Structures are given as structure tokens and as C-alpha cells.
Image (cartoon, rainbow over all chains, first blue to last red; front, side):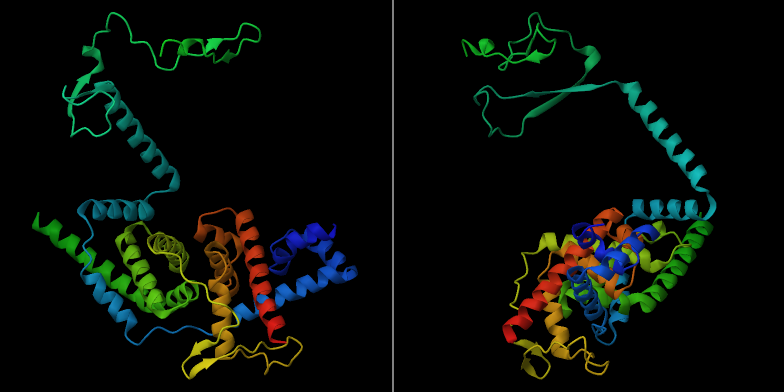
Length: 182
Length: 192
């Protein structure tokens, strides 16, 4: 292990958070490298200083004030229900059973969602506002299931053209030709 | 129906009593962490209180078989991050500026590591100076240093509390300690 690698790992070495092999390699390196040993010692001292910081005590009666504050906290109904379910789950269900239940719930939700089909939102803009204006008043929104929409005769020409296929390599490339006339 | 409501009410009051006990048992520890994170008593009180309120709201989701403080560490970290988002960046003070103490202002004396254990006892000034150095490093680094060196958590526990990987903890901790060391070293060099 070289100095650069040791420098990166020396903090974890100090905390004993490396594998046995890494710990051994660093110890051997430190035995023969004064620069790395100095770095290690200075970090160890910094850790020591932080660990010796005094214990910051709160003002008297702080716990009581927190508890009093909790009296005014209103836990919403849905949160209470969710908390109870979670508490029940933690107490009575194994993680596997909880996983199956969650999966079942997701499947039910997905099944319920697929019955209705996708919806398309059409915003009707009053004619006295120019098209493209960003400052409309709240638009009247009409929601129509996709199944009731019939395709128009000709789709409008896109402002930015679709990329044309590149015959040489099969990939798709963009050309400027489609922008003519805009 | 009344029976169900009565049972729910009993369950809620039991839960509340259990939570109040946890507040009594852990508020000092939470406050100490909060103080070292924020660097002042007013913010430490706000942070601790907000953390317990959040814990109370989600108490049902706390897994009773796990230690409460591990869960609380995670909440404190989240509340701290939210607090930082809401507030403008705190002013960073120079390390060689006089430190406010209960007896007026004082300058820092850093004990020499070669001195005996008596000399190594940190003075109040040293404490305040070190706190300033902590305040001056990035919040993520500071959190990692506090959890590792004050609370004595393992890298795995810190990763859980800070919702990040063990590799990230390792990096934040190393960089945090190096920054702290450099700030303190620069100060001692100026004083000599």
C-alpha cells in the first residue's frame, strides 16, 4: 500500500472500520513512514478533541416543555390509521408476510387503475387570448376518456421534425431540412 | 362502537405515556447532538423539539424491537437538513476571534497532546473554539464527525442515520476530520 492509499484510509483505520488485511497493511506502512504516521497522529488527536467536548445540557424542565408541546400536536386521522397498521404489522407480521401484503395492495391498485383506461386532458383556451401566451386565466379543463376520441384527418406538422433514419449506420440523426418554412 | 372507541383511546393514552418516557430518557442526548450540530442553544432547542414532534407523529412506524436512539438519530438528521433548507446560511466566525464565554470573552488555548491528562482537559474556551471549527465545516461532514466521535456510532449506524452508503460515511468522516484539524492547526500557527 502506498502513501496515497494510506492517506485515504487512515481515518477508517483509526476507527477500526477496515478489513483485517487492510488494517495490517496500514499498520505495516505506518511503521516505516514518518509522514503518514504524523498525519495519523494529528487525525487521532482531532478525534480525541471532539470526543472530549463537554456535554451540552438543556435548560431545566426542557423534557416537560417538549411533552407539553406534544399535547397541542394533532396527528391527522389518516396518519393515525397508517401508524396503527404499521405498528400491527411490526408486531404480528413477518417481513415476508408484510412484503406479500404490500405486493397484493400494489396489484389491487394496478388492477383498479387499468379498468378505467388512460385519460387525455384538453385545455380549452378562450379565443381572445393569443395562442402560445403564457399568461392565461385558469383554463377550462375538459377530461375525456381516450376511447371517445376520434383521430383527426391530418396530424399537425411538428415544430421540430422527427429525426430521420441514418441509412449508413442504422442510427437516427437530426437534420435541419424540416425547419424550412418555419 | 363505543367499546372500539374506548379501546382506541386507551391504546392512544398508553402510547402517549410510553412516548413521554422516551422523551424523558433521550432528550438530553438529543439535545447534545443538536447543540453540536447547530452551535447554539436556541437552535438546539428548536431542533430537539421538532425531532420529538416528528417522532411522535410517526411513532406507530417505529419498530419497537430496535433501539429508539437509532431511530431518533435518523429523525434528527432529517430535521436538521430541513432546518438548513429553511434558514439562510449561518455566519462563519473566524477561529482566532475572541470566543464568547459566560465570563466575557476569551482566546483559545489548545493543549499539547504530549502534555499529561490534566492539561488535556478542555477548557470552556477550547470547547467554544472547537464548536466554531465544527460550525465552519460542511454540514454533512459535521454530522458524520458528531455521530462518530461524540456518539461513538459505527459506520453502519451512521450510514443508517444519514441515509447514505458506508463508503460515503467513510469519505465524509475523513474529510471532516481533516478540515477540522486544518482549521485548528491554522489557528495555533497564527497564535505562535
